[in-house]
Image (cartoon, rainbow, N blue to C red; front, side, top):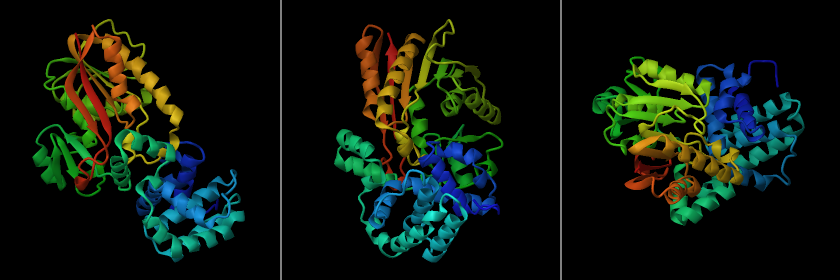
Length: 415
């Protein structure tokens, strides 16, 4: 690229290329992509907005681009492909002025060695997108934005209407939710939001959370409404010993500690546990932090309550992490389900007789949710039983209020 300071559009294209060509998560790319981190203020926010919009509507964007490309760009043209996609996203999703989008995108291509051979093609294609593509884009069905294999799964499991409602909700940015330690109504008023449910406050406008009232004092933490709901299924945990497996980044650990539980938080990643420590320190909450593999964790004791927020495909979080749709593959579901079954089996062993176990995944896939718990109940019928406490949320739930992430949660009891 050019040796001059990067533009927001340039940084956005690089971010998208990192995800779609290199298979990196958008969060990782945001953390260490040089062209993005060289930006400040509005430019930084603009680059992130372009990259997010591109990934959120990538399937539909590619459908429109294919109308004007005689053949796909070659595999070695990753940066050029990302420039074309981000340029189209600015026209189709963000509705930015065509002249500025086309001229700067072509200019960026001309200044990059790998993209320069495609600059004229970009100019022609983006001009057609600006004049003709917008109308066609508006008529695309919701599922067009998603990988075919994923939307097909949702249709099979949820039915066509529900699958389309979920896909429609994923077209919108997720609102910012926080969990407060107490006085939800008071904090909703201070932050200009509203009480969504329980201790969850939904903010009406995006804010810099680190500068918002109550952040430095540790009065609240960022946590989607659906992510906060599973812990409530446990009822009163005050004074109980609770093991939080796969605990990072710590939202449920803080919920449990704020409710008076004696929490042990276990995670395999030392780096992610640092975030848990930081969050606990800021909020003034306490928990024992242990870096260990939950599959083999052997503390020599059992716990009144075990919470297993298992690693999963995270397809329920696409509103916040649109890159997940393009990083996952069908085979991932089966491998993750096998891991979840192993973790749940271990979690049962760590639960005190007559104690509760909360199984949670932020996935919309049936194999990672009810199927895992049902299999455990069938395999160990004399040790565990199901309870009536089951939660399933999708991004289409309460859509008129901004929706929520997709979660499956169920409480089972050691008998």
